Length: 269
Image (tube, rainbow, N blue to C red; front, side):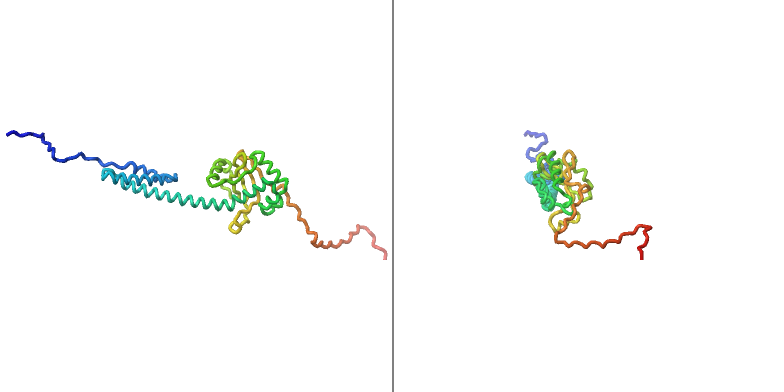
């Protein structure tokens, strides 16, 4: 009787090769995207990659690790996305309020300047500034900015348009950093490009009650750093008040007796 040797290997043992567990690269990339919170859409991308990683991990039957990383990517991504949405809502609300209370009145004032409407321009500024302004001031102001910028066109069409114009005028904006004098620079559009329209806010105005700010003066700062002012308050005296024809004339003061020169003899008795 002969015996067949199999070399010590049992062909029916059923042993299979051990597969090494690996971490999901998709989950890792998703978490990285979610943690980069400075870019708005990265949170959405991170959350989507996290969900994709969870699906892959479930299909692999335990051979793919990283479930915790994927869950973290989804949670952080959703949180960052919610934070960005909330931030954008706050910014858009603030921009809308600023647009109604500040941008619209300045745009209306500049439209009146461009139309050479002295009455409307005077109505758009407050206090003694309105009395100081003359037609010569308005003509000089229009001629100065038209020479360098062309005609006035409009205010920014939206928040993104305003940001783009602010970026284009960043050098001109630097001079107003730390300003506490009630001076507000804003970008507006002219024929030859954007320029800063700088308004001096009347501190006695109450936007909460009137719905808009009031201005006492206006300047334009061009991209060449030229400053053009609507009027010079130091060189424009306030015109005298016009008296009403029906106003009573005040009585004349009594005449003082003439002083006699020294050495004059007394009158004869």
